[in-house]
Length: 401
Ligand SMILES: *Cc1c(COP(=O)(O)O)cnc(C)c1O
Image (cartoon, rainbow, N blue to C red; front, side, top):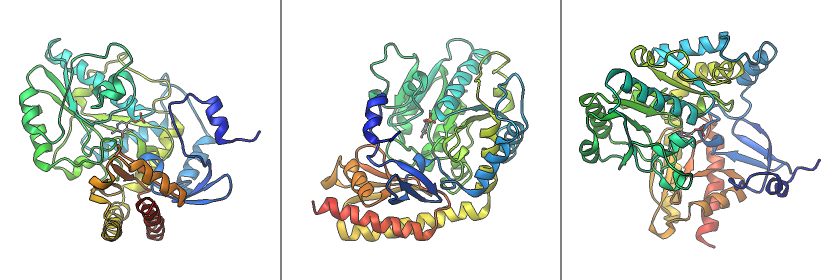
């Protein structure tokens, strides 16, 4: 059967609009399409392929587990899941782990746990969840409602209730809204989809203090920012604030679907037998791969490499901007960077992304005004330089069009 992009439109639900080329093979930070064209990958599967494509050690972990045991369900446990949970608890504030298959599912578990914990300890009145405008937490109905873009959650009937939003980095607005009725505050420690927005230190620390004052749980959604992306294993480690619940997915599996919710022993106690679950959560294949990802990412070389690569990106992007004057700001942290377009190019991020694909560079957008890069944490410097050469050509083609 000849597989074409036209066939996509004939057989798929139309919720996505992928690029015209179809990738068939990847290695490190390079990808090849059906016609053998080579691309540099600055998209990283949307902050997922933390170690690039087909990293030999991940392929080995997958093959090894694939020959042993694929799936059991949670009626039986398995060695890779227990080992991965042990590592996650050793490396973070958490004492307990719940495994899911995606970021949305990890967040769904976090929100349900927060509600149940509040009910167990304070009573039914404590049900308010506060989150931030432009935030993104997934596409299940609960998580998308907590996310801060009504455009994503409208049009599906009645939404889960007691969810309120305030502006990110606006501590006064949060202080105004939060009360003893608040059961949890959910935030990204670096907003990804919303436009690569970093929190100020005062803001995150202030959020923590307000949560403590009102006995509200602080949930950090590190689905995009976690697993080395900011140069810290988890972003909270660079912010001087510890959440009560943390969710992680995307880079955790390096491309194999997995998500996890991490929390303390006391809070975890509210997820009693039967309260929540998942058929695939803690699947041995996913956990075996994630265990290798974590071992490799959590090394001083990889984590300091992320910050060195960020410097290289910033330096070269600065040079490009000197020539073309398209960005108002380069923002983000580590290997999660955003080029914010200035007034002259407002709303045109997608044009730049499409021009980049034409120059054989894969990148992303974060909203209409930001071009986003979320490459592999171990992308070779040569690939960064070559990718940015292609990016410059793309910029030039848009600017001179
Ligand atoms: C991608 C993302 C999610 C959703 O993850 P899925 O695996 O697509 O369900 C949730 N939160 C954040 C911050 C994300 O970036």
